[in-house]
Each structure stands twice: as structure tokens, then as C-alpha cells.
Amino acid sequence: MLLCLMVLQSCNRDREGEPKTIILAHAMHLAHPVSTAMQEMADYVEEYSDGRMRIVIYPTQQLGSERELLELVQIGTIGMTKVSGAVLENIVPEIRVFSLPYLFRDDEHMERVFWEDPIGTELLLAGEPYRLRGVAYYDAGKRSFYTVDRPILTPDDLPGMKIRVQPSVMAMNLVRTLGGSATPLSYGELYTAFQGGIVDGAENNPPSYYSSRHYEVTNYYVLNEHTAVPDFLLVGTNTWNSLTGQEQEWLQAAIDRSVEFQRELWREYEAESLREVEAAGVEVIYPDEEPFRNRVESIYEEIQSSDPELYRLVERIRQVE
Image (cartoon, rainbow, N blue to C red):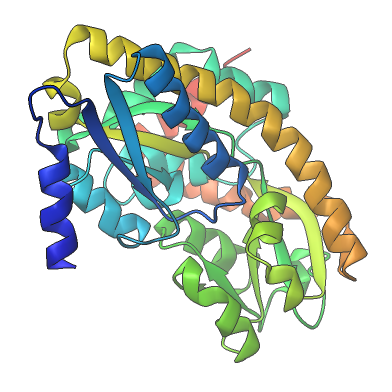
């Protein structure tokens, strides 16, 4: 690892006559639409800059977990990363708002918050005091439960079940409020955790469920769609500030184009993922969401009294038309 980091640091240093190079590392599988979009971004930036700028990508946790990659970006060892909002919230407290259940009224409301309303840009830039500049949201769909032995049709099915969650206080609180036992676990360890009986279930969006092949070790996918936590594309502030104005324009143009590409690809892959897991034998279930919504209302009541600042963010998001 030390040798690898030394090589990366040397790659980040400019040499006369060579293109400006930015290292981007992430944890996604190569088949995932977000991974595909980031590769498209790398292709776009080389095209826009006529070869004067390039992005070198290290996927699939080659350089560490999402938390470790955030730290590498903060210290400038790598220039960029992509992480889930559920991981970023442990550093940038405002991002916790996206892990709240049933925050958005519908898909249109969610899209306006991420890509149209000023609050979306405000939350992207909330990480700058922590040396993390958000430059894009990637659509990560909605997260739902999948399990091995029995489906979660209502909150009453969760007691006694160990559910893998991301290392997020909000995600753990959600599962506990619904009655389950929240089990934080690395995404890369989850497949074998199912095989070993360490967890009974997990929660994620359809493309991630499919691309991770978790459908091979689970039998039920219940689309209760409790959260819509976006993925964040981040640039270290030191890296961003080291770019010329022209280089920043090239990079942001490539990022914006990749976002549009990813959103379209996501819709297609989401539908394909559900078809494929059903064909593999998984029972895909569409439950009544109302019992889940009612059960988690206590989370908002608690936030209103214990964290007024976060609750103000909730209210601002709810007011977006």
C-alpha cells in the first residue's frame, strides 16, 4: 500500500509537456452504471482538453474502502472519489438529511432537489470546510430490503432480523426504529456474510443488488423504497484549487455530461436489474409503503426536538416544488 501511495503521489505531480493527471478511486463494481459514468467522464475530459488533461481510475476498492478513499482525497494522495452520501455524512453532518426515510414525495421532487434547486448545490459544497468539494450527484435510486429466508412485508417482520447497513448513524437508526437489528458491515464483505449467516438481510437499490450478485445468496427483494441516498462525486479542495480556470472548466463539463449519461443509464439498468434478479429466482415484492412511513415518523419527531438545524434542512427540502 505504501508503494502504491508513493506511485499515486508521483502521478499527481505535473511534468512539463505531460497532461494534467487526476487520480480517481472508488469502490464500485465495473458493471455498475455509476462506474460506467465515471469512465465516460474520463473519456470526456480527455476529449474536451485535446489530451491535455486526463483522469486515471482505480475501481473496486483497489485503494481502499469508501471511508479510506475520503481520507486519501482529504490529504491529497488522490484527487477524486465517489462515495455514498451515507458514508459522507460521517464527515459532513448536513448530508445526514439524505439518509432520512421517505424524505422525498416522489421521483420528481427528488430530482428537483438534486439537480435544480439551490439547496442541492448548497449541500454539494457543504464538504468544503473538510477539504471535500462536491461536484456532482449521481442517481443512486431508492434503497429497499432484500433477505435470505423470509420477506419483510411490513415493519412487524423485522424484529429478530440482522440487517446489514452502511456505516451511517442514520441508517442504523432507521433499521432499529423499524424493529430490526442494524449490523454495519463493509459492502465488500456482504456476500460472504450472507453465506455464513452473519446477516439475514440488507438494503440497497436494484442495480447494486444485481451488480454485486447478492441475488445469488438471497431470495426476496421487497421494494419498500425507504431512502433515496445519492452518490457524491468529490474532488479534494487542494486538487480543485491547483487547477487552472480552463482545467476546472474541462473537468466540470465532463462531470456534467457524465451525470446526464448516468441518469439515463440508471433508468435502463434499474429495469434490467429487476428483470434479471427475477429470472434468477428472486421473488420481487411491491409492499404497501404506508406502514413503513408511519413507523418512521418518530424519527422526524425526535430530530425536531434534538437537532433543530437538521430539521430546518428537512423543512427546506420538503418545501421544494
